[in-house]
Image 1 (cartoon, rainbow, N blue to C red):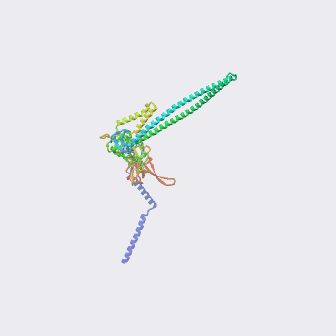
Image 2: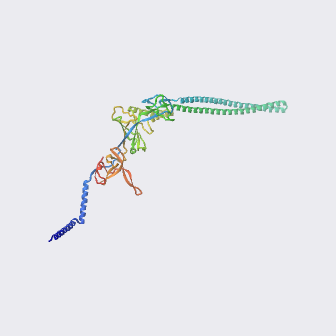
Image 3: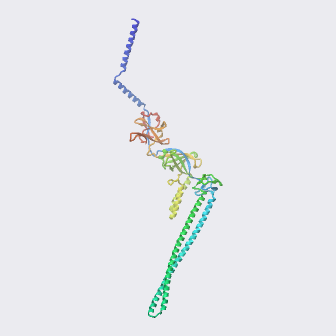
Length: 536
């Protein structure tokens, strides 16, 4: 056998063996369908068994609501005077005298500073002289009225006299007429001569004329009486006019005195002088007519107001019973505690904050006891009034005192704060001091809260990790309020509207959620977890 034949034979054997190997491999790798399904089921069961064995265990909690739960929020607070007035000049002139200096206590209405304004003083003198003149004119008018009244009485007497004269003249005329008739009868009998009859007729005519004159005199007296009545009305009107002129002059005097009083700066309330910016001899400008500076500043510091601004998410939890705790760097170791006095029912659009104020008594407990007793005594003062005038006066005094101790009609008397801790000096607050104010929010009887550890951040957003049907679910939330210990949150949920679309809305927690308490980053959202519920 040649070498070529031997090579062809070897190549053929190799090809045959490769073909047989390929057929054998195909027979080995091909399995029945039932066998493949069985292997797939065994694989799935193996994976599930592996997953169950590898599912981590998470400590879970449920949201809780309880009135006793508190969330503390804090911010920077400043001390303001209870009242503070920066007094300016309302009259231009030179400072004549300053009666109070920085630190001096003042009473309401007490003179603090005087400005020299001679033109206003002279105007007051002029108005006073004008009032004296007007009063003299009233006296003259009253004298004229009295004279007219006396003349009226004379006129009335004259009318009565003239009426009497009428009666006398009428009687004389009747007498003469009857005598004339009697003598005419006698003349018919030729007992009386005709000349006697003529003489009696003249006498009767004279008596009749006198009777007519008397009646005319009565009419004239009555006309004069009416004129006198008109004169009295005129005199009374003159008196009223003069009195009105006195009233006008008095109003002018009051205005002049008010303008002159602008030169005297008085304390608007009980307090203390905290700033003085002028000295005697300084020229000051009228604040209403030009640019002026504060002359003197008065503040009330026995009461102070601590002011802070809280985030808008705190606003719905604020009440008049919300407790505030205040600490100041200038008084280390001392904590003041008192309920808030007022809060603004509006959010400032500039910084999205709510203004909160706390009024407190800034003196000793003995002084506070005296103040309370004084308010009680003044409130009971009207009960002892003997008449309506005294009642009104006593009530006015009591109301004025009470209003002076409050900023608003609905406010209560500033509280004496509870103080915790000790200080090396008397713990008094001064306007301008800065500290930390912490509010204890308690309105959680109808709201669910969580431990702050149950809320975490990812990518700048807040989330909680819920366990739903054994699977960890990442739920976005909005933190409404938190103090690092507790947190109140609202969750985002997707709702379908009437048009079939969907949108995200915020909803409160229901209390049924099962939430991973902490170490949320160790659990993968969408993966199964085993839960270990616990109370908190």
